[in-house]
Length: 485
Image 1: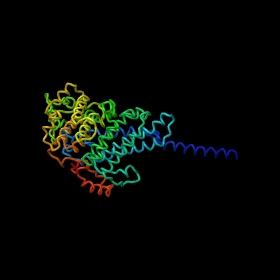
Image 2: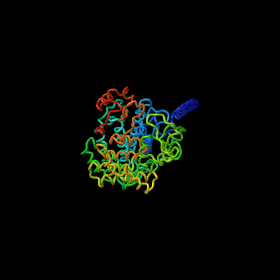
Image 3: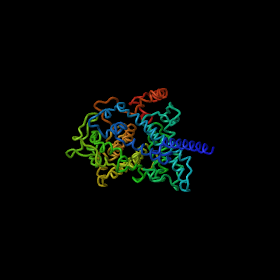
Image 4: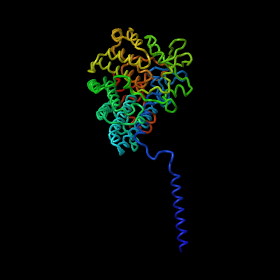
């Protein structure tokens, strides 16, 4: 009897061990069982910056649409083709899935995490506020790109047909959220470790300055849609404290080694391809003004800066292309910088908002900062500012535009925003300057928006139809709420 019991116990033990081993085999030992909110934050941060600054024609065409660059061989995107490579889907998917959803999960996880030290506990609210600030930034990009977008019902995996919310209503709500998040930041406490934040290394004071500067930019975008509200937002942001030097720039730090290099380095160097040259629109303006940033932006051909005709094939060897500074692996990914802030303040002053200083002083400061940041000298700045085509008062007097300051500020802001396609494209749409050349084989008028992803028509047809009707038609030429004047 004892032998029988022993045999049964042995068999049961063997079966149990076998089941345990099978269970072990079913476990994924390569991936972590859980992901920290901090790791999701830095993942979202990188995905957002990569998408905004990439030159890859499968992901972002705005540097072509801002006519900084021209394609050398394949010219579809320079001719405003949005469908051949599903460009809108890349922007939509990246911002919703790889940025906003990660930020949403990061916020939930950090909210539920019990931290072990007083310093970590004190940092928790700041982490949540910074996540909210980057969330606002990311949604603002979507609204500026498409118009009406899913917002109130977005990011819910159980809702596969979210409604699209009115663009200007979303934008105004984003400003409210941004203000609340900024006000909640405690500069006396910490936030993310430097390893979890490649923009400001967790510096709360700098995140606060960025948030105020973003609020300034968002307020200015509303200026032609709701001037009274725009003025209030802008003056509030300036009073709270916007960027005052390049030390405040929102620059993402890239590594010198793949896969963490600047995406431009991947597109232009590691790819081994020669797909892009300077565009004639920018080389013509810079040549006419003898702009000292030319050698910092581009190479020469027989000592000249030569741009390719928009929409036409342009041989790589016979045209200027991007400089080594732009192509560098560690070139920063810029979300917003001090030069841009000064041009926004110049525009605000021209609109008679109470921001301190006049339009000329901020305009001069924006140009100065841009030239010096790229590596020019103060002597070059002084010479450039004295040129008839650059000097603010002279350029205003010589302008034939209906609103001269829009042309003068718009042209120089565009030059300073070089290599920042999305923001430059928004500036062109808002101010109507500089005037873009008509591509040789354009498939549409100038793109005032990305069209909605084709996939939305099939997977979310009812909401898509409503949004398309609400904005005035899902076509490239439809002007968004901030671009009506």
